[in-house]
Image (cartoon, rainbow, N blue to C red):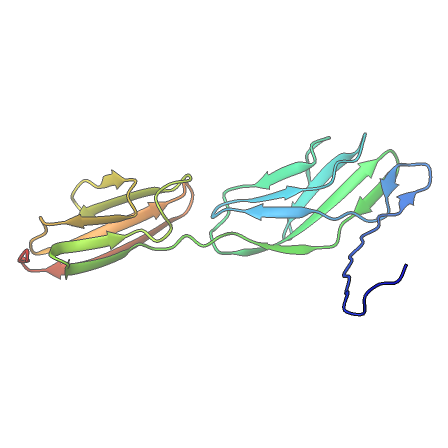
Length: 185
């Protein structure tokens, strides 16, 4: 059959050649998924294989027959070199090194005397999905947890306002002030 002149086809094919008699590919690739404090690595499953995972210059971590591993307690917004090694019987394959970056945990912004509020905090990273947001006035005051992405207060007089976002490992903060008494418009 003939194809129309204006038809264009793009096809990408990735082939993993099987090492004869082992059921093992000659090469191995993996996918990564990142949060602000972790990188999860997933390798295609190979029957009866064992998996090892490495981050940066660390030693390989054995994960038995589990083809997924999570590197946890990592600083936000940092790049890491990931590598995987798969063993089946006496055959071993090692992946190329790939870069993976943790997500950035954004510091909250704090502003004063805006829109009729004495201060306003905006949590750009959000306050859900494992993130804890809190705000307080002056260092000695108790902070208040919030799930709102924006908080305003009318009760700040001659104070400095502090706001924090934490993922359980990393914490970033924002502050602004001190301000005199504000007038609510």
